View (spheres, one colour):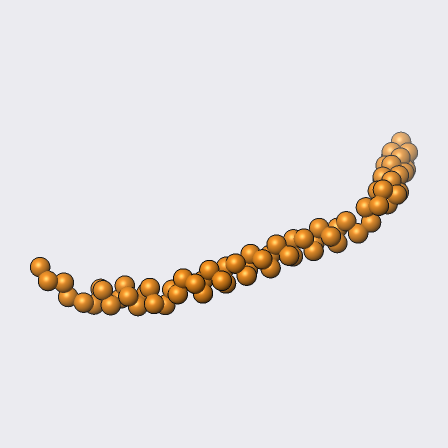
Amino acid sequence: MTRTFVRTQVAVQKAFERRALARGEAGQGTLEFLGIAMIAVVLVGAIVWAVNQFNLASKVQEQLNQIGTPQGG
């Protein structure tokens, strides 16, 4: 009984694989991977650009100077 089940399962899996290849889906995983990699590159580039535009060091220095400056009152 188990052998019959396993044989049937393997036959169905092979049929699905042949059908997928016949429909031209060969290489689909590679294209999906490249798409994800391109999105990651764009996101990293956007983050680097945003950090460079923000100039965090000067903002921190301004706040530290305000803390160290005595307030009248």
